[in-house]
Amino acid sequence: MAKVLVVDDIEDNIKLLCFNLEDDDHEVLTANSGEECLKQALAHKPDIILLDMMMPGWSGAETLERLKQEPSLAQIPVIMVSANDADDAIIGAIDIGAHDYIAKPFIYPVLAARMRSALRLKESQEALEKANLSLSKLASLDPLTEAYNRRYFFDLAKSEFAKSLRHNRQLSVIMLDVDHFKQINDNFGHGAGDQALVKLTQYCRDTGRESDILARFGGEEFAICCADTDSKGALALAERIRQAIEEASFDYEGNAIKFTASMGVTSLQPGDQEFEELISRADKLLYQAKDEGRNRCIS
Ligand code: GH3
Ligand code: MG
Ligand code: MG
Ligand code: MG
Image (cartoon, rainbow, N blue to C red; front, side, top):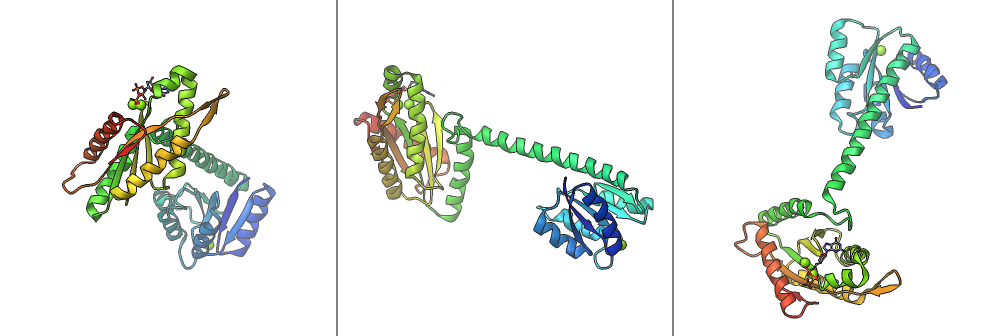
């Protein structure tokens, strides 16, 4: 069963098609002009459109062109239905993007078979798009924590960096490393360590803003890129995250596990040319935080 939009300027043609389509359990929408077709298509997103060629106002070909120009409608298969079965008309319509072309008077079962073919194609295209989408999502995320991975972080953060330079806006980076993480693994097992990383991601998300780009950089090291944030704001955020981590504890196989983290915080400075400069500054500050006793933020 599909949602079918039937477009024809002659009421009787519409009636005949509706009769057949509804008999096949399709949901039928109708339009008696190209203009109306576009409106209906935008409002109801049909699965397929049966479009008359010869209509006053926009012709079938003109209507088809407009459907194909509209990004939200371009994927809907259109079958042209026309009394004109001249080769030129068929070629023209298919070249504009019609999926198929059927001459009037048509045999309904033939039209129905062509519709099924168009719908099958649309379905497989949609499945492919969905698969591509989840694939690209997978490729951008760290599988354990679902924070961004390092590679995708650089893609996003570099583009934020370029925008900040262009528009003279603030940008900050926080590098975070869990303190004595090895001890969590050693004392409670690798699963506890994994769980700590998942919790850490959650603490960072709960404390930060939606726009902060959070990534697992590797091991127990994370980076946060904060657009439109100056050094004062970034240090305050880092400090809130540090406190949230320090105060939290989670249960793992009956053990209440607590940990702390150290952070290096830096912001865009005059003269910065590459995003990597911020990363390496934040990294140095992070190691300073470790040297000075851990569980602290240094900017
Ligand atoms: P420091 O305070 O100096 O940062 O000490 P640390 O123990 O946190 O740092 P170190 O670099 O000595 O150890 C990091 C440990 O993190 C070692 C490694 O086995 C562990 N690790 C890295 N990735 C994972 C992971 O995905 N899961 C778990 N459970 N452990 C991991
Ligand atoms: Mg007509
Ligand atoms: Mg560590
Ligand atoms: Mg580390």
